Length: 374
Image (cartoon, rainbow, N blue to C red; front, side, top):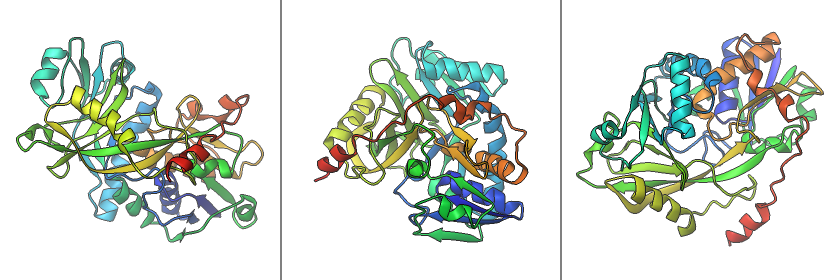
């Protein structure tokens, strides 16, 4: 059996790794040279958490994926996962708190509910307002995305870098199965899933020298939701100088070939507002920034499904901004589907059939993004 995987980001790399682990001949194609900073699998750090506010059906996959990340660490000799815990912060009715609490309760997770006083006492880096509460998810941490992708691809015998796959027909005649894991470029190859590519900006903000509460052992990674400012997230300091902060969604619609890579004050001012409003010991000085892309489905849940026209073609992910942490288990699911024709994991929530009547979402802001970059 021969399998082609299109895309060398986290989902493609994980799929190629898990298929190769079964002794199957697999080739991974990527238009760039992964790990790279041109798609969705970069940025020095990514949160992994278990008390999942996006849906309790994700939790069994998350419980399974932690040992898989440790397996990859052992096989590669690289440090990939740092356990820090994670805080979901908001009012008690917010999606992040209520959803995380529901997942924790349903699956008996190692999590704790913190009221405003306890949250303020334990975590001085957060500005806690009246009504703010949190769920502390202890089975959570931070992944190094570039190292993760490199480790997975190191176990794949053949990676075709700098290779653009323009048509699935080019591969279907030479391979028994094709897995499309192309992230923001997915719509160039398939048209039966409505996708929107979203530009995201992340900034590394300087922290005060005496703000020693931002270290990984004292400051869990966090996602915070407020009625006035939406979602933000943060990563504990990994260099003792900065903390990474970003907004979750609310980015401009873009196109992978025309994304505005340059970060300007228009991008940074909302992040400065968030850090000034919700954090203590963080300055407005930004050391560096990156852009990346979310590939969103209309409901912000994943897609793992065969083509309606050809079961030799499998499409995975469309991560919608929260998929990196799942890489190894989704890769293993893809290996199940390609090699065995089915999987024992529950992937019913990820069927593309839920979008059967939905129109394709065009990247109609791409030209405007290109104009702003000049």
